[in-house]
Length: 296
Image 1 (cartoon, rainbow, N blue to C red):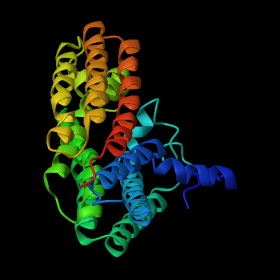
Image 2: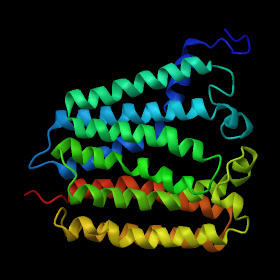
Image 3: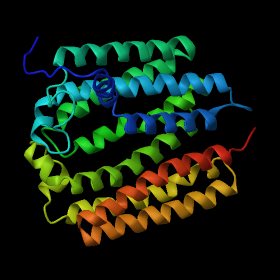
Image 4: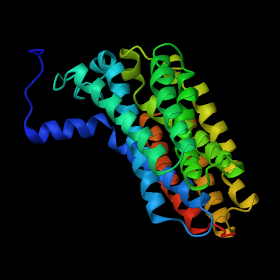
């Protein structure tokens, strides 16, 4: 055993395992997968099916977060916002975290296959591998990692749709588009707020390469503009009613306004406003999707 690893109390030990799962991200994944399931379900949604969807996608997300921290343990040690995580702080050993991440990943994908279907399990495995083996290493070499990382981030509602229907029809890809586009201003706001931290960690995020913020701001606006019409497609293709359309339009305008504000101000406070708007936008949109669903 590494003598540099601190001996934790039971409470600290439990909280460290929770922290490995990045609970806020995992919770958001569970919300979006639930939205995909509720929108995709034929007729009335099965509460048991919804439960299996949320649990299975949550397990996959937790595994991806743990393995991400195992890979980035040295980088996390260099960054102020991550240096107190269990691995860089020395409260856990790398082998323990690796075993935990693999075990939860295997259990999560097996759970999806056993209680839902092979398509959902395959999407879960693909999400996990893309996040851990492509996005995470790419963070050290290219600012394009944000675009790559948005792909596994947009797959949970697709998994929810697949869990309900066992197919990948048009609605699934509309949900993918909404989540993909939503993530970009969200990620860019975080990257701008912590650009100095990312630079210390050797991660060339766009705001690190763009200290004046012109390209970063332009992308915030462009992705928010693209999100607005895409977010209206559930009504256009007949999945939701007018209530969703009106709500999504209002949310889209608010997100665009926050992105424009952050783009022109280019300050940490303005980026924080965009971040806060983004974390309100998504659960409200998912709620509107579920509440305004058109039942065939």
